[in-house]
Length: 301
Image (cartoon, rainbow, N blue to C red; front, side, top):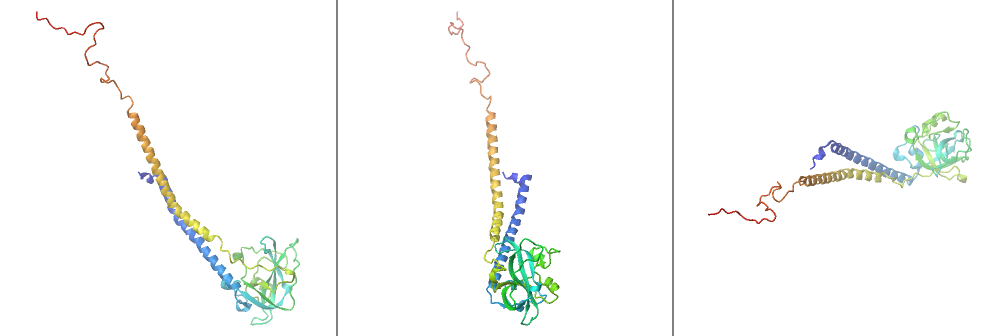
């Protein structure tokens, strides 16, 4: 009764199910690995944010990419701001994640340590863009004299790792990406790889607005997606079995109805007279009314 599984329709349905199962399992593991990556990154961010600050020169040097393990690590840098070469970074959002404005990027010339005289880029925070995007905005003044900045160490931005397109022809002293190599070319002097996202001291009047620390509590929906894909994979054979049982049940019901209909049709016109149905009497001939039923006996006379 399962010969219907060899039909074209059921062969195609079975093959589709066999393909979907491993694909869904693989998608589940892909989401699970993304969940593991998110958990590991959250742990790295939390550890580095709570680590004891170290001199910026301990983690980076001119032309040296910042290792991922050192991202968000707290650092200190002591020097003097070079406000003459200050730039703003376009199309950046405020802490509310909605308002578009600028990051203020100011070079800090180190005044002590093994890299004395080198420059490190400091993201001092966010400001509103204003109405005229073609001119350099009004930027809150940086502290004068020697200052000590504490912040989070960040890697250079590129289009590949940030998704931000580096547009040419921008107004003077405006950039799209925070990139130490680009600023080293503009400044014509060594610039430490990466940049510092300032957390202290707090700016006077709250401007520029400090960049909030990255979210390291949320794990995202990846684990839930992984479980969903695996449930889908498990549902495929279950659904296939249910469909097979339903198909078999429907075919058995159809066969039973057909057999019943055939039995009812075979009994039509089979009835007849009790005497054989040929319309002829097999008994004694009927007598004429009024005549006695007698048997003629030959006279012995």
